[in-house]
Length: 254
Ligand SMILES: O=C(CO)COP(=O)(O)O
Image (cartoon, rainbow, N blue to C red):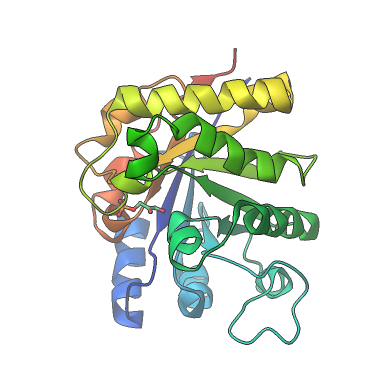
């Protein structure tokens, strides 16, 4: 058994329809590794999802950047899991640190969102990661374990989950985690899953890294045994995203 490499592009709150068309055409025209080798999922802002989905090569998939914690209704400004499914959007990113920190999403709230989205049939990229202060105080593993625990307590099937380790201090800062730092936390997360969920889940789940990944640093990170792909922000809006996709390596389960 092998874990298939996974590369997500989180476009965050960026782009105009013209820019979005350009990014998609670069991606569609790029010489990228086959869909047998790597899953590629791009995540534009909600308003561009139908446009991107209609233009994107069928080997690539789309993800929303968030969805509501339960069935839609009187929740002004929110987008429900049901709506994403209605538009055939297969993936959603949940628990991104920008939402945790700027919008106050707690571990429990993110866990509830993950559980609801999965129960409706969405696939989830669930994000965890520590702040600089937490890292410097030696709390990294404790923080990512608590974030993962809040998810583990609410779901029983991890088949449709990709776990994204995104240290907050590395996001948008140009300060990428060293390959050793990323590997260490990915390995700790896998150990946590092995003890608290199951050996099978620990071995099969894709744990991807996010935070200042670019065309120049992706290869060394991708070579780490527990780095199963990337969640890319800024560089996913640029042609070098193709190079990041092509850094895909095959990871065999123990
Ligand atoms: O937050 C990220 C992806 O979700 C990472 O962002 P950057 O790649 O811009 O650091």
